[in-house]
Image 1 (spheres, rainbow, N blue to C red):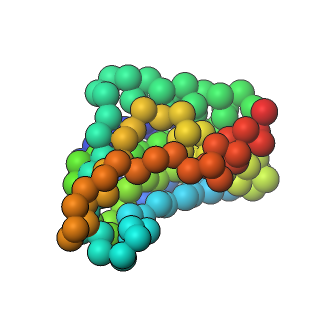
Image 2: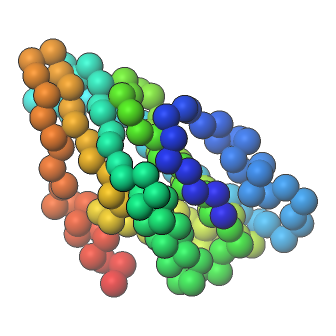
Length: 149
């Protein structure tokens, strides 16, 4: 399992290779890469600043990954979430799930993202040309996580 909260960018291919290295039982790799997008009211986002509690955030991400591994027949997973100031179009999050079969990999990957959006202790602040404000949780994200229960 790879869990990381970091400032530096990530390499999707390297993370996938690291999970699969030396294995011959993997038939599927499902990945999700989230990018910073400009959803500000005036489309004037300069940066998205992400804050977290070191140690607590990693523990939460590991718990979410372990939940996915108990629900689906997956072999391993990686969750990498960036923090600090990120510009529009930069990578923000990577989820990689490896499994013998695609259905488990796809479903676990989607579950991980839905739970990350609602259960990981990360806070986002939009920095625009006109000021700054904290981003509130979206009802859509809350509903998506609830649908897994």
